[in-house]
Amino acid sequence: MNPFFKKINFIYLFLGLLFIIICCKKDDESCEPMVDLCDLSSIQFNPTPFDLEIPNHFPNVSNEILESITNEKVSLGRKLFYDPILSRDSTISCSTCHIQSLSFTDGRAKSIGIDGESTPRGSMSLVNLIFFNNGFQWAGEAETLKEQASLPVDNPIELHGDWGEIEQRLALDENYPLDFRKAFGIEKCTDISQDMVVDALASFQSTIISKNTRYDSLKMGLVFFNEQEARGFDKFFDVSPGVIDLECGHCHTDPTFTSNQFLDNGLTSALNFLDFEDLGRGGVTGFEVDNGKFKAPTLRNILLTAPYMHDGRFQTIEQVIDHYNKGGEDSNVKNPLLVPLEMTNQDKEDLIAFLKTLNDRSVLTNPDFSDPF
Amino acid sequence: MNKLLVFLLCTVIFTACKDDEKTEITEKSSLSINFYAKMGDKSIVLEETIGVLNGNNLRFSKLGFFISDFSLTTNNGANVTDIFDLNHIDFSNNKTLALAEQGVTINNDQIPVGNYTGIKFSFGVNSDFNAQAPSDFAATHPAGNSDLYWNAWESYIFSTTEGRLDTQGDDNFDKLFVWHTGSNDALRIVNLPIDIEISQDEDATIDITLDLETLLLSEDSVNPLEVDQLHTAESLSSMLMVSDLYQRSFSVK
Image 1: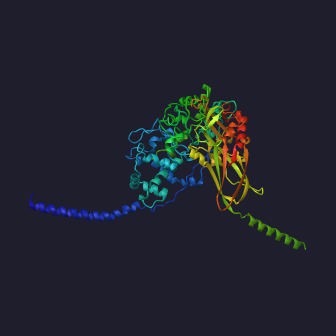
Image 2: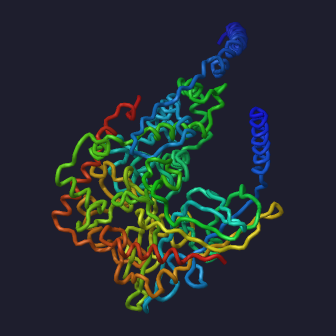
Image 3: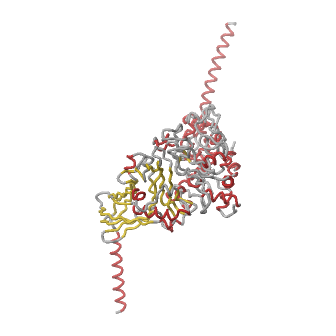
């Protein structure tokens, strides 16, 4: 190349760089409004209480809890529940294993986590968590609803998220800083925290209440059971003398149909407390006498949430009934309520008729619980 | 003259009232009550063989009961009522000997100081309270726990005694028993003598032992080999017998 042109090129290059630097400087100045975008203090923070309608036959919820649930937190929590942004590679969300159309279970014996790896247990339904008083998840790994919402996020088999990274992603997102401002009154997008994320998730999950079953209608005096449903109810709760007592009502108590207790329901033939592959509650408490115990799940929507038990070993409700009918496996440590029942086919049909009254399709279709994206 | 008498009478009444207000201000101190579940002199550890019943090794799986309407009797015969709220004494934490020996403790730091000679409580809940249901309470309240309510009776479960027996002597605990008491007829009042001074200088403690030997090894005890399920209307008479035995099973150590 001609040396003259080389010189001209150099000058142009120099001028170009100078221009870029000046532009950058100007850009830096114009960056200030970008920083301002992270400043949320000018946006109104006016949270409004969520109107959680709880029927009279349900347990009371303390004012402290009710007041902590706002429309803004619920709305944000719903978005986060369905948004894969919480997972390591943004591929799965809470809703991957808690599918609304399956009453917030996933229809699998064991759930599938972020890398296609199987979790040790099945996905539990999320209905009526606000009434739980004795821990969450199959073995009570989480003591509070917020903890329950938090644990799967950084669990390496589940969402495997990193909380620091999640906070950054949310802070840089186009919409979330505004949502967090409305829900929590943060001043800057960088104020978004793990605690706020799980608070919002827990708030949303608190609103997933199953209260529209035929059983609820009966409790509210709106319907009568037919004869078969009434017989099933009688046998379930052992209401009338002379009727077979199926012992169901001890662990599946009205109205949530879970006692929230951790129990050995005779799934393992155990000579002693060391005979369990999955320690269940014992794995959390460290006490041998808790080995093999799992939380009694709710029976609301039970006919829509197969397979059954913590490991999904039973495909049908009939298999579950047969298990209890024989009193569970022979075991030295199973719950003393598990005794052979000698049910007839009629008893089984009556029981299933009653269980059908616990179906709540409104949970499956309620738009307030659905994917907002 | 009449006006003067009325004036004097009123003055006396007002003065007397003022004196009463002064006497109502009493000093308060702390009282803890520890409950222990035992079989004779052995602390009950859940799911560990605790003794022999009719030749069969015995283990307990679950123990608990409601207590309510607590009162203390002073040495001059007066009663100090409502010293504790409704409590569910739950021995589910008796998972090791050390935990069993800790017992279950309830505490009130607003007990009037003084000398006390008796303690009284209801084993169960009274009929007014029992007319309510868990839905009337928050899930975190003892009475809001649906696990402690039996729909069929429309009653709280006053006591839960569950366990297992080895009938063949082969270390296979093959006989299970579940005794639940409840309904208004099952309410029992427990009166226990004490001799305790509650002072501001130090916290007072009362140790109450529930001895299940009385429940299971008395002459009139119900045999769990014969009555293994006690929670149905058919078993009302046995349930009331168990309630009577429970009433006698408490003592102050």
